Image: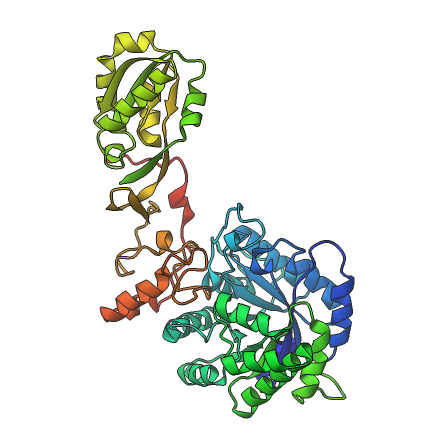
Length: 298
Length: 214
């Protein structure tokens, strides 16, 4: 059974890390990072052409990470594939014994590095989740029998920092209805938002992994706050980054403090760390958040 | 309304580089309203082509250009001119151009780019409103089309991409789903969007679509 599923079902604090496949065939940096977090996280969540930027596929990267002994989470969006390709990709993941899938609508292709391409959106995130449920049941979307059935643990995304938040909650309910068992959130910097989100989503039967992006500079904090949907970095955190001598160190500290607070206040069931190419810092964050154990995850 | 814009002059002149004698047709409906293919635009195009050394044998605002039988009848009246002409320049939408091309036995060229089915906010300002998806969603969506107004055509709620209620694709646009939500909330009809909508049937959009009600 999926380690991530087991961890969440045991009500243990789950840790996932996000990794982006390389642009090009050189996997050395990704493998370096993977080796540093192996045994320290319950899942490695591999993005599907993140930000609509062309790169190696999530599936190939998941397979490589699995061979390295990590537990991959396949992200899949509706942007680039129609329902035939999505089902085929999922069956292929099943062949590689990848057990976790995270379904997303996907950023629009115009925001990426091939803005002239045609965006697909045959299925939305809810449709993808329904499709996975159908495949798990041994059929395809047209009702044909599958020879050999995959068994996926399904996740989805939610953006707590969203106005109106109730609309995100409404979609979250539909995702659960379609089969999502856990959610990862967009990066959280404001505990108050998570408190409100927790209150508004308490009726929803699904686990929540709070998104964490360690900051690298005050500029990055300001940029994300201004430009990235669903991210709001409070001024006092930007100020802390500005005044810090070692920015990366301070970013790690802020991330760890945030995780500790989220955990102490019981605002989430785990965390999803998006280190954006600096995955080597993840063990440090976990250490400072007191989430690193000598025996590792199991 | 079929919204169109004028093609760049160089492109039009390029189409007609080997043609000396030209007929210009327009359309009485959408292209007239859009000021791309009405009487005024035909006169303007006539002057332009004459300045380029062309001879304009006839002009006609077809009523409308996309009506096959009427266009055939109207073009019959220009039989003599068409026989003499090297080309027809149509200032109608893509539909109207094709109808003319079906009827006339000379090369027909487009003078406009057909943009979308949309609303006339005011003259010269248009906004896409309908993608002719073949299964109108407006009955549950508060009169706001999720297929057209959401660039991803989402039917089960918004993506996470809105920032300050604006769309990730174009920050000048409101997020269609937030607008749908607010409208339905106001009408106390949020139940309309709580049920999962199954994946769309894109067979409805197979091209070329045909409709025969006879």
